[in-house]
Image (cartoon, rainbow, N blue to C red; front, side, top):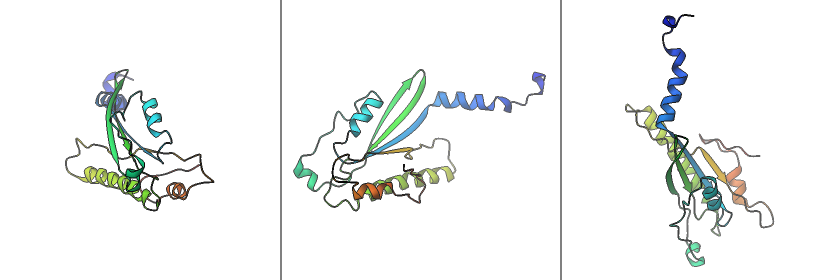
Length: 169
């Protein structure tokens, strides 16, 4: 086949690849689970960083009235010329209350809000600089202690009927 017969779409995958590598990737990881299960340690080890150096650990008195917070940390990582904008969504206070019936609702609402915002941005007129803040992955930590599977873990791991697909094993 002669080079003059090409329209240009044969090189489209290469063009998209080059553009994406140049622009970089975004990845949002959410971590949830009770305090003391190693969430921070795992994240710091995976990405060779210290995301939590400024964190203040609440004492027992402060934990009594604590609700689930949602804290976003964003860092830029570059490896072999490929850029990654990594966002870690932390959920301090998750599962630490005496009554945890509503703990999961904060996490679910946050995930739904991010999907709805992305959908609104995609449906709008100016789609050139959309930021993807959707949660791409949720790591849920289950406590190995106690006398069985905690009710909050059962609530979290039940199949959800919303845009965030959850797979349980």
